[in-house]
Amino acid sequence: MDIGAIFLLLALLILVALFLAQPFMERRARRTTDEEHELSTLMAERDRVLDALQELDFDHELGKIPAEDYPKQRAALLKKGAEALRQLDAYQEGTPAADAESRLEAAIAARRADAARPVSSEDAFGDDELESLIAARRSARKEKSGGFCPHCGRPILRSDQFCPNCGKPPQ
Image 1 (tube, rainbow, N blue to C red):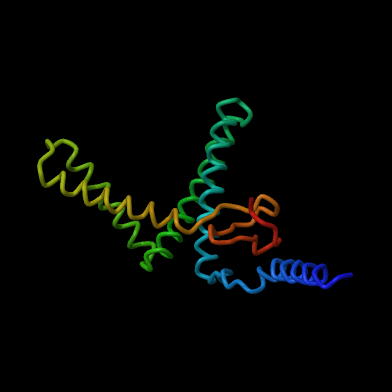
Image 2 (tube, helix red, strand yellow):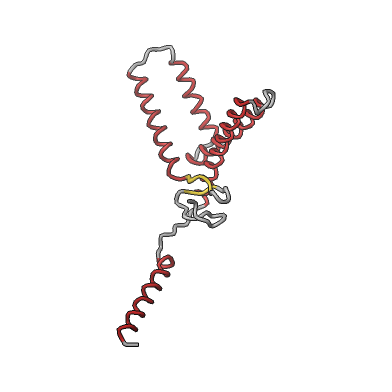
C-alpha cells in the first residue's frame, strides 16, 4: 500500500470515530427534576380522566353502558378528575387546593350575580383580566406535559428524548 491510501484510510477511520463519539461528547441531555415529573404525572392523570369521560359518554350514547350504571361511573370519573385538577392547581400555583376552589366559586358567583345586569366597562375589564389569566395558564400548561410513551404508557415530558421508564424514543 502506498502512503496516500494509508492516510486516506486513517482519515476515514478518524471521521467514523468522531461520528460515533459525538453523542457522548455533547452536553445536550438535560436532567428533569422530580417536580417536572410530578407535574407531568398530574397532567397525564387529568388527560386520562378526560379521555375516559369521553369514552364513557360515547359508549352510553351507543347503548353499551346500562342506564343505571352510567351515572355512578360518570360521578366517579368526575370525582377523580376534580381531585386531579385540585392537585394540579395546588402544585402549579403553590397555593392550597381550597384557595383555588374558593377563587373559582367566587368567580362563578360573580358571573351569576352579574348575568342580569347589562355589560358595562367595569365588567369588560374583569373579563379581560380573567381571559388573560386563562391564557397564561394555558401557555404554562402546554410547556411541560408531553403526554404518554407509546411503548409503555407512562407519562413523559416534552423535553424527554427517551422515556424515563422504558428508554425508547417517544416518536
